[in-house]
Image (cartoon, rainbow over all chains, first blue to last red; front, top):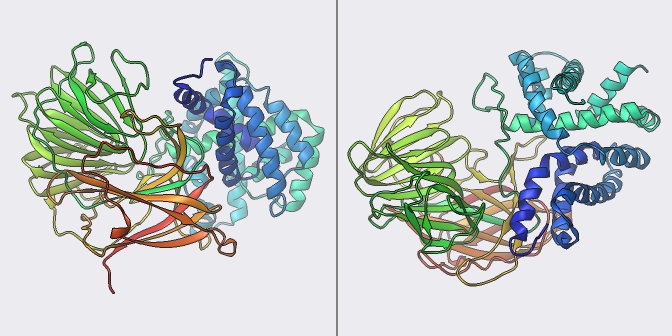
Length: 178
Length: 433
């Protein structure tokens, strides 16, 4: 890839195009979205600084993942002081395997997720999206509906597992691998 | 522990509800089981995609609506850098008289030209490569103008003299067909001075929440994620709220707000008095940045959003700079305009990861009319680690050097690369002492 002249716009195009894959990769390695977002920002700065090392458009995602992995492992050590985190060995294994993921996997699963969400009741749709829309919303909902937070988490966990399996089936049904 | 229990552990992990013992167990199982690691990675991707789906989910609507597009992704998600705050104040733009805007996507004929611009501006249109930077005097056919950064702005003048002044961040698409001229504004602020349009061919301005039909007038329009605010200075604009098709005729010195939902009031009313005191409230006043609802005693905040600043395009070459920025402003919603007078103070409360040089700026409109200027200043914010990065700053109006009216010069925003920053509150007040 020629990155002269318009290299920044080309970089931004690739960066934006692969953002979901990179965020998903980070989410596999880090315990919270807060940490993911911080590391993503730090990693993107490093990518920008090391842009000259990038060879070819096709090489962007693997190259970016290497940078992201490095920053994620660094961050894991830092957050391990005050958070529950997976061991370094486990995170390294997850990272190694996630590097092999097909480049369009996250995008295909995103589309499948839309179909799967439509199969849920309105109430369950709202529930699975609530943690992202309203941090702390689950606890409030539990208080409002007089249910225990634990039972709500269990229900949410079941719904998410159902969605995960549904997404897998959707991808098989469309003729690809899950 | 069986597979179901492993699945439950994984979900509890991603929901942040896992206990210490459960974490140890999950870690042990992941280490030993490649299949479970694949399941874990799939759950991480699901978490990512659910988060994306949630951002496309209509917050204003009680009934869930799942949108399949990635509407929340910013075209210019960028990297690094310092916090830049830009707030919009006062009202109404002054604009040169103009007339029609001309553009036909199918026609190679130019419909308008770039009269002025500054900062990161990209044009995607017929005959141009994607994201090409336009120059002053360039003729435009139909296409999309992206005015990306906070200091960016552009003025487009159509063949009949009508002018559109756009302040970044904003994205608008221009076209012209048999039914007349059309501007689609996804986000941002426009000020239009529209010459009388041919009979049966009004200019239309379409936003995510409203459609304005214009025969010839001067008005300002502000669009954010939740609503469209239209303030008319001269003439009359017919505004349709897209949520329910209801229509309001907005006369001179009146304004209307069309929200994405139907519950809020949709009625044109006199512009009313200015206020001199304003305090930000999120997400109402959010213009750019990521809204982080408060929790556990933590206040609502806007997290800075990264973008790439490529500098002025008027001959001066600079290396691209990575910035983080937050934009808030009173002009997007139903709040009355804020009048800045001598002695006005700005109180800013926020959070930085470490000490940075931070730029603060705002742009203003004239009391009845268009854009009147941009102002900016910079401050070294030294973070007291005991305060966990929180800072509070007070700036006076005199602290902001005025940039030229309709300036052409570069905004000299060069800052070291940094990490995330938050804005908790911005307040404008009269001087009391």
